[in-house]
Structures are given as structure tokens and as C-alpha cells.
Length: 351
Image (cartoon, rainbow, N blue to C red; front, side, top):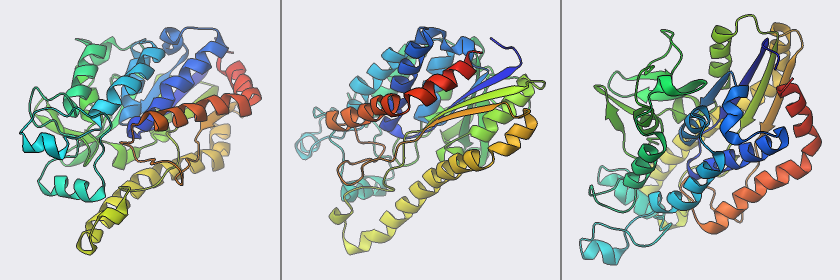
């Protein structure tokens, strides 16, 4: 490969919708003729937010992307579920129904009790964030950020110091967490506001950085400028989780007095995804600026599907088999509809 080429992968946040990313990357690697466990060798830096950050670390650790797809198929339905009324009435620690997603009214009631939607109520509960944490620990073990095999960047909110921050394994004062356990960093960056509990380690409490930057393209470009300041070419692969509906679904379940709170949730969600949309549009519109920097050697591929909000619940905690199959079909169709463009991009990527 050309050592003067900077290669970037950016993986946006989106809860269970992040399942599209390992599937897309698996197909990408098959066309490249390499196992997904070797893709890190072809990457200068990976930027990821929330679930995309977890996928970024898995990719950077040289983990199998098909195994990462299995995480979403098997674990998301246990993370994004709650106890039934009968289970609550019997004080059960467990939820025994997969994908039992609360409606909007239930969500507001849960948040009104000063807890997040999918906080596991007991250490032995078989659903919620317990499942996420267990899967993260199993995937990354005792690995530190320095054990990752390529450069990683992950936006996060540092609630303790009331600031935005960026986890990275690259040693520069711009970043934090260079020597953190990967499992700690991933638990912190996947702590999606309202959905999953904040995570504390090293004396600080962190939340998902999606509201800060759900599509960290520019921050990843800034990182590769530090890593490869003399690069003459840049390839950017952006895998988004798509454009869906904003806020909690099932708005019809709330009463008139609750609509104000529903609007606040909608606006927060919209601000997060709007930042992603604006970043994607900026990348398309201002590619000429990169062309000037990299001597017209800028190559970009973007997967950013428009989701079918009329027929599917596209909220980040949607985890039914039907929705998973729909999201998988979007990836498969992208490789049919854009086969020539993807193949051309691969040719630039491996040059």
C-alpha cells in the first residue's frame, strides 16, 4: 500500500442501528479479499461514536466483524427490553421477553423515576446494561487502549468536568484515556443519554458523545494530520446508521401534559442526528477543501440510507428480528446498487 495515503473509517452512533456497520465492513473485506480481522492493517485512524465507537474498537482490536454482527443479533434484544407488568408485580429481577421496548408514555414514566430506560435494576438482572457490559468485557478482556492495533478516536461527554472530550490511543494533549482499559472507554462512550446509565472510571463520570459529535469526520481527519502530516492522498469511508425518525416513537401513548417532555426528547435527538446530517453534507460540499490539502487525491464513500419510517420503528432501541432484517437488507442492497462505486473506492483504498 501507498504509505503516503491516509485511510479513515468513520462509524456514527445509532444504538441497534449500528448493526449495519459490521455487516457492511464484512462485505467490504470480502471484496478486498481479506479477513475482517486484518482490516485494521489498511486503516490510519477510525473515528466512532456510541455504538459506532464500540465497533471501531472491535475493528481496531482485530476482532471478527461477523462476530460483532452476532452481538447485535443476540444481545441487542436483551439490552433494549424491560420487565412486563407481571414481572414488576412479582418483584422479579429479570425480564423474560425479548425486545419488550417501552412506549413513549412508559419511557417518560421511567425517566421520571430518575433512571435511564435500560438500566438493569439489580446486579443479577438478565437484561439492560448488564448485558451490554458483559458483552463488552467478554470482547475486550484486559485490553488497554494501547493494545489496539490502529488509531482510534471516540467523542465523549465528561460530566465530572462538564466538558466534551475525546478518547484516543494516540498520544497527544488533545485526547484523553490513552492508557484506559478498552472496556472502560467503550462503556463510557456507549452511555447513550436517557437510554443507558452514565459510566464512571478513573475519577470521572462519562456519557455518550453523540450530542457532541455523532459523526466525527473532521476530528478523525485532524487526527490523521497528526499521524501522517505529509500524506498526499486521503480515503474516507463513512458508514452511517441512516436517517430515521427523531425522538421517542408511539407519541399517541402520551397525555397532553407530557407532550412538552416528549418535545424536549425529540429536540435533543434531532440535534444529535442533525449534527450527523450536517457533517455528511459538509463532507460532500467541501470536498474541494480536502482536494486542495491532498492535491486532488481525495476519495470518499458514504453509506447513509434513508430509513423507512412509515413501516418501521427506526428508534435506536428498536431490536426486533423484523427490524434487524430490514437494516441488513439496506446493506445488501447498497452492495448491489453501488457495486461499481464500491469497487472503485476499494481500488483507491488498497493502492
